Length: 388
Image (cartoon, rainbow, N blue to C red; front, side, top):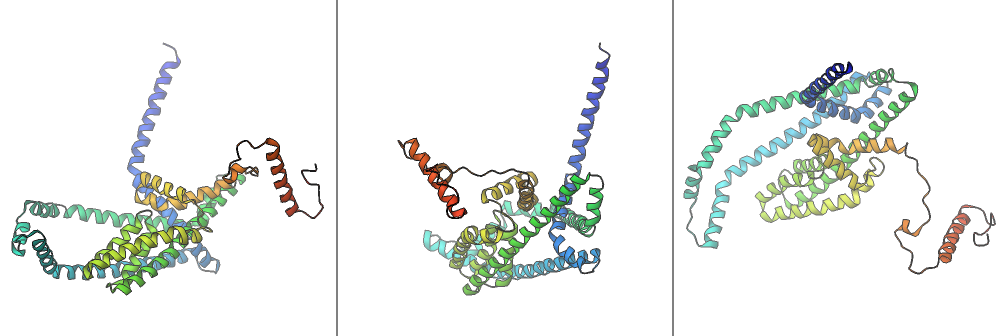
């Protein structure tokens, strides 16, 4: 046996053990790492407001606390308003359920010539096996629901604590990070941090504006139709449609459709049509103008980034995918060397005609170059390309 073989075997086993230990630790800490990532992007989002308040003489910790307090008050007010709306609407729907059931039974009897009654339908539903199984499963799942709620509250507390630290001690964190890097790398890290702040803030700013426009538009529609709780429904549509990518618009429109259906079934169709039409207006007219200066990403790249983020981290990845890709694109754009594009017909989406002599193509390219130089310089400066 060679002398190096035992050492190589021990080294291979040690590396394999380290890999297994690292994989186990990563699986155990993946939830915490995702919370830290969410907290980091949340701190980047409030960084401009905190820095502006800090530059006016306010302590950075106090400024961060005031920003978080304003966000929490706004979120609590929205949840309370939406909760009261849903509670009242559910009570109304439960009270009017016998009337809805009678109308459905009458329509079935008239359409299919049956003789159903509400009492028979209620008895069959109450004594069905699937309802009893559902009640049993719901009773046994109360503990699981309580555990999920407590886990969600603990996760929110963790995110807020980390984001408060990142925002309040942002300068100290940057100094600590730069202290272990050479000067050239320090400048790159600070530049990447600044780009991330600009892109994340710009993303939230543009989404906030689009949420405002969407909420106003849907509020006007709901008021015209006479749908109750129009302000809360408009806020719901504006926020959910903008901050849940790809499918947020249709999730947001489901609740107004349901409420409108209780008023008049045709109103639900009106709401559905308006949601579809407004989505097209937003995609092709409103969003390009609002995001061109903040988060300039091609729609295909944005859609692909949302899909990748969802596949990697679920709903959290879908939410932070667009600002993360915008930051990466802006940072890498400074290191990609670009050249002047050749003046070729194929660049502009056109093709040369068949059988066209090479001399004619050369003359046309010379003529185009000469006209470009004539527009860029003074009269008589240089000679015409054909003369040369």
